Image (cartoon, rainbow, N blue to C red; front, top):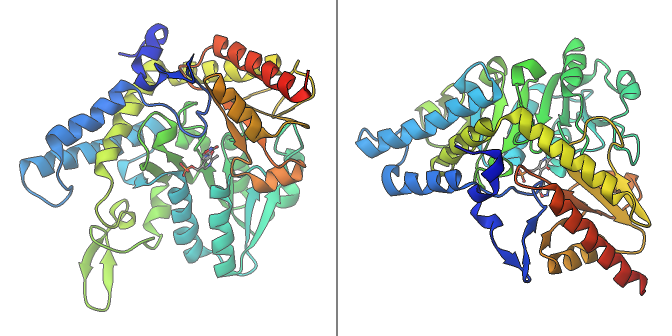
Length: 409
Ligand code: 7TS
């Protein structure tokens, strides 16, 4: 049973030195570390249960199928979905959003329609919509971001959310600003004009309690590797009625009810959207990750991450010449993004690595937002359950050393 006081012991990768210093892992928005329970779940599956799912009548295939479908039920419960059939396994957030854009978009979008996004979207919630817009003739429109404070400009919502909008897709938590968006309100506003909503949950899934029915969204996309599960597995939640009316995204084995030489008929969701051998081995790690996070308590995780985000913002704000992005007050996720006029983000990341600190520097797949803010990129420190206030002090001391070096003093 995980326990907050011994939490770091659950994550083997944290216990190492980097460049002779204890690792300070602050790149959790890119990927989190995995708890032992997740690594064990993966080994256990391959050591005992490995066989292809939904095909065999032998014991291992049945165990593997139970583990795979068990993971689906666990994810449905984790998100408070109405049914397991509303969970489609994918490679992660990117594939989930591509699935909605390609499948729902090809069936419903046409010239004259509008796809509404926000200026803070990750390329994963931007490029798939550009692709379907090009194919269907629908137009893209953006809800603006206020500036460095990184809030959605809700005063503009009525102007952009017009009846031509058929889909409104937005991130729950910004990966480069730390903003927590009022997603339930955005869903309610979209519903009023009959638009469907897609939430990019890459940065919220492991950090906040997520209840898709309370949020009122139509789709919610996430990646397992950002919540302690392994890479290569994630999911798309979709409302049953919408999924049942969507065409397949890919064709192949497992998704058909019957096939003729010239045409085929599809199974309902979720099989319809899971052509080919699914990633059953990695799916079992979602069960272990959901169990781990629920045992810690997702409200408590949210408080912990948000407190670290705020503390980091405060402690970094005294550094000379720092430009901090994201909300100054109000809800903030567990990450902080910053820039210095005279020191490139890549230099900061490289120098911090000498102190054992893992950061990320660059545009964070938010190029249009960075351009709007007049930046080429930022340095980002992002936190998770195992990070501590002391690690923020290590970060601040390292940044002081780096600034001193670059100022030549
Ligand atoms: N959406 C958001 C908001 C993200 O932060 C990311 C990944 C994705 C989508 C894509 O997730 P994937 O698992 O399909 O790749 N964000 C980051 C990041 O901030 N640094 O590395 C990956």
